[in-house]
Each structure stands twice: as structure tokens, then as C-alpha cells.
Image (cartoon, rainbow, N blue to C red):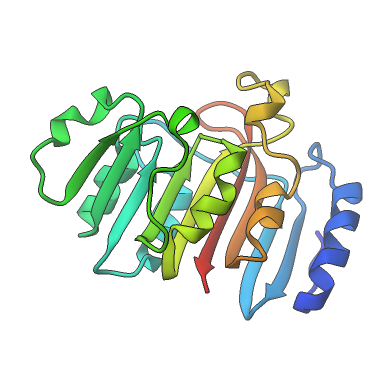
Amino acid sequence: MISRDYQPSMLRQLLPRFRQEQDYQSDILILPIILNATHITIMAHSSYKSGTKASPWVIRHAPLIPAGGQVLDVACGTGRHTRHLHALAHRIVAADKDLAGVRDLEGNSDIELYETDLELEGWPFEAEKFTGIIITNYLYRPHFPCIASSLKPNGLLIFETFAAGNERFGRPRNPDYLLRPNELLEAFMDSLNVIAFEQAEDYLPHAAMRQRICARRR
């Protein structure tokens, strides 16, 4: 185990070294960093359970989403995170190209169902609109700048998807759908204050490599 505190000015020096030293085969590697008075944890091993229930990463960080605004659930699928956020009294925009999995939520005044193919139509959401944005098991890199700008000040991004190394376990194997080491951290560290970051080999419900970030709009 490696444990050390780093000043923000050292973060960019740290990342190339971590990229070189990181061993996804190791049992555990934890590297805490202090950035903007926020604790980041970079991990190479953890456990995760997905399915119809909300992601533990979303459950852990959703209480940090400010109250009183709308939360965007990108590629909402069956609505597991839309339902979790609604239970926390948030208003939600649930977006996907196929809304069959959330049709039962039609008519709920706190949930807007938004049917769109984001990769064909671009990013249709307004700047500084959302108090939170949730993205899990979905990756389209051209969205990255739009994601950050669509958060209201103090809004929260919770992002989790598959990462390089997942090809050892199954789909997705295409690099277009796999995050590079530290990619989420590097993509959002300049525009958002990072609260937590992990890249981890998971075992439940099946083996996979995932990367996760939680970050707040300045």
C-alpha cells in the first residue's frame, strides 16, 4: 500500500508516474491525494455490485447533489438511478435513445423523460442547467466539455464506466468505449473540483474494470 498527501501543484507530476507504476494485476493499490481540500482515492482493486439497484458509487455520492434543481441521468436505461434520485426528492431528466425501460415513470411530475440519440444529435442540454449529472456504463468522449458546462455552480458530476483492461473480462472491448488510465481525472480536473476518483477491478456481479469520478462545478 502507498499512502501520501500531495499538494495540487504536484498532481500533474504524479499522474505520469502513477500511469507507469500502476499494475492492474496487483491486489490493491491506494494512493490518496489532497486537491483543493478534497480527498481523492485512486484504486486498482475494489468490489462492485450492479444490476437493477443503483450503483454503490452513485448511492455514496448522490447525497452531495444540491437540492432544489434538476438532475440529468444520461443513458438512463431501466432508470435505476432515476428511481434512486427520485427517492431522494430530486427532480430528474432521464435521457436515452430508447426509453422503454422507464415508460412506467411517465406522468410523474418530477421526472422528465427525454428521448434522444446523443451521439447523433449532439449535446442538447443548456449550460448551467443541472445541479447533478449521473453517467454510468456509457462513454462518448465528445460530450466531456459539455458535461462540465451543463452543471450549475456547485453542481455535482457522478461518472462511472468501463476502463482499459476490461477486454480481459468481456464486453466492451472496443477502446472507444474503454477509458484510458486516469482519463476521467485528467478530463475534469481543470473544470471541476474532484471529490473522489477510483479505477478498479470489480468482481460482482462479474469481473470488470471500471473507472469512477465524483466532482463539483466551481
